[in-house]
Image 1 (cartoon, rainbow, N blue to C red):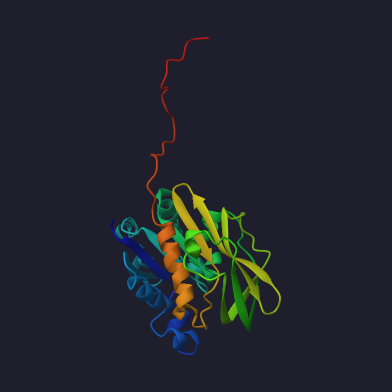
Image 2: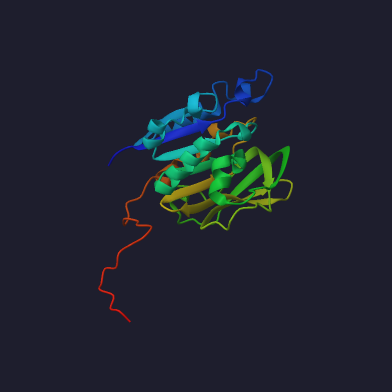
Length: 244
């Protein structure tokens, strides 16, 4: 079996701002931490791409060589070129997996794939987050306990304006009382999509082994699947149609 080729896309703006806490938590960028952890897993080969690279690092060749893409963005969603967004969406339709992380709920590709505002409630208050596994048999939950916790995470709360997930893997409870659908799966044409809530830029979330286990599981789940050929458009009759 071939390796799963992952492109870890990161906005990489907060981490380059020396006055921002993210520059101390992720001095080389969140994308490098995620890619490093994925590259330590058998059968996965990860590369990175960032907003300020030519074509946002997502050339036609890179997209063609990507089986699964992870996406983290926050402060510069509007700077992502619409033409690149359309290329990403088309690749998902063709079978590329797409994993939207944390504030990527507002990213152009995710909103385009969902067709909704993807809005939600939020609060930064250093809250404990307890993630409950509500679909224990799902491949993304493989090897997890029935819940796991982060001592500090940004609160995201309902209502999360998304289409009803095809599968809901995690629900998170926050110390302030809110709950949130924090691990959601969809299929769009041939592509699998996973949204995973944790990952605020000022917290060391992506150094957490359980968080990276979830992302690793999601990469394996979202990788292109073998399946029947899909045919669209005008199609000739297989049998003779007798005149009426």
